Image (tube, rainbow, N blue to C red; front, side):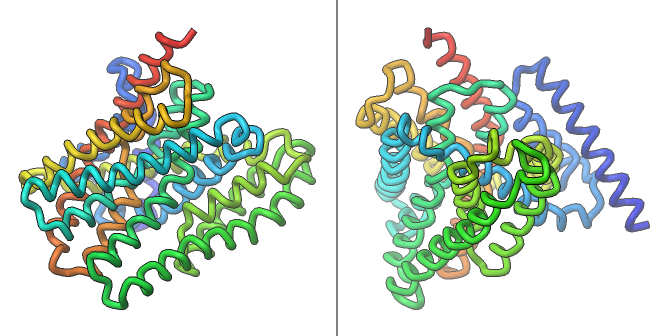
Length: 386
C-alpha cells in the first residue's frame, strides 16, 4: 500500500496547488501564502490528512527546490546586472545583515534577555527565504530594476548571514573555540563556492550543445540534482553552491540565449510540494509558547529590516520611490534560519529550548505574512513608479 499512498498523496498535493492558485486570485493573497495555509490545514496542526511518511519527503523536496531557486538567483548575478545594481546589492545586503543582528540583539538585551541568547537570535534573524521571494516575483510577473536588486540581495545575504552567525556562535562560546567556529563557516562557504565552480564551469561549456540556444530539461535537472547531492555529501551549503554555479553559467555560457531557462519550466512542481509540505510540517502549537521573548524577536526583526532597508537604500543611492520598499520586501524567513537554530541548539544546549521555539514560531509567522507584505510592496511601488 506504500506505493499507492505515495502516488495518491502526490496527486492530491498537485491538485491542491491548483486550488491554492485559484483561491489566491479571489483573495489577492500570494500563491505562496495560500500553499502554506493549505499545508497547515491538512498537516499535523490541522486535519492530519497526509500519511505519516509524507513528513520524511520534506527534507529531500526542500533541498531540490531551494537549489533550483539558488541557481536562478545566481543567474541574476550577471556582469550586466552587477554593473547596473552592484552597489545597491552589496550595500543593502550588508546593511540589512549587520543592522538586523545589532537591533535584534540590543532590543532583546534591553528587554532583559540573556545577551548571549539575544546575540544568537539576532544572528538567526538575518536569514531570509529566497524561495518565497522568487515565487512572489514570478507570480506577479514583474521584472524591474528593483526586483533585480532584491534578487541579487537575496542571493548573497544568506552568505553574509552564515558568516555572521558563525562569528556570533564563536563569541557566545563554541566548544572548539572561536577559530574552530569561524573555520567551520569558512569550510562550508568556501567548499560550496568551489563546488559551484566545479559544476558551473563544465556546465557552462557543455550544456546547450544538443539543442542550440538553451539547455535541455534533462541537463538542467541533472546539474541541479548533482549539485544538491554533492553539497549534502560534502556537508557544504547547497544554496551557495547552487548560486555560484548559476552565476558561473549565466556569465560564461555565451552560447545560451538565457542560461538555465529550462529550470523555470520544471521548477514549479517542486516549489508547490515544498510550500505545501512546509506548511504541513509547521507545528502551530509553538505559537502558544512563543512568549514575550518571541514577540520581541518578531517586532525587532521587522523594525531592523525596515530601518536597514531605508539606510542601505539611502547609502547606495537607489531611486527615491524604491527607498521605502526594501525593508518590507525582505521579511520572509525559512529553512536557513531553522538550520542555524539547530546548530545553535546542538552547540549550546542550555539555549536549545528558547532558540528553537522562537525561531520555528517566527518562521511560521514570517512565512505566512512575509509574502503578502512583499506583494503589497510591489503594488505600492508600481503605483509610484512612472
